[in-house]
Image (tube, rainbow, N blue to C red; front, side):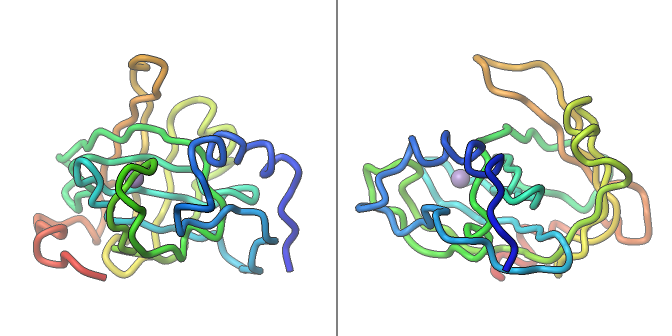
Amino acid sequence: MKKTTSRAKRNLARYRAKRDFARTPEPSGSSAAAAHGALQYVVQKHDATRLHYDFRLEHDGVLWSWAVPKGPSLSPGDRRLAMRTEDHPLAYAEFEGVIPEGEYGGGQVLVWDHGTWQAEGDASAQLRRGKLSFSLHGEKLRGRFHLVRGRAERGRERWLLFKGNDQWAADEEVLTTQPER
Ligand code: MN
């Protein structure tokens, strides 16, 4: 078992503060993380007040998270707004279910894609600099992707998520052609 680090626990304070775990079926992140050789990647389709796709990358015991209103694209020309959200517990990568109406993020959550990811270099340093380049090994999303930070808006970090140019780039509207897991 891989231990949840103390840094991961601190990073989850914002996640926990937003949720009442007596009411939501989401994981509290209190249990130790499962052991994984490779770092997890997941996209969750979240039918909340507004449908969006939550894009998450495992790093140092938590899931770095972005909410992508229009969802990811396989076309390098599509730069999708990605609002950084609070780090989530690793157990969240497996979460599917219905968050009750009236609770934070109320609505259905489905795992749309999952797999592993690999940063091109030092992921922490890239995140701090606001330019993260990485490869995804998912079932729907594969190959190079980039996340680039823009201006903050009302204290929230705005990033752009887009596909890198490689053999996996495509014009396919993957959100429509493959709407389910
Ligand atoms: Mn969400």
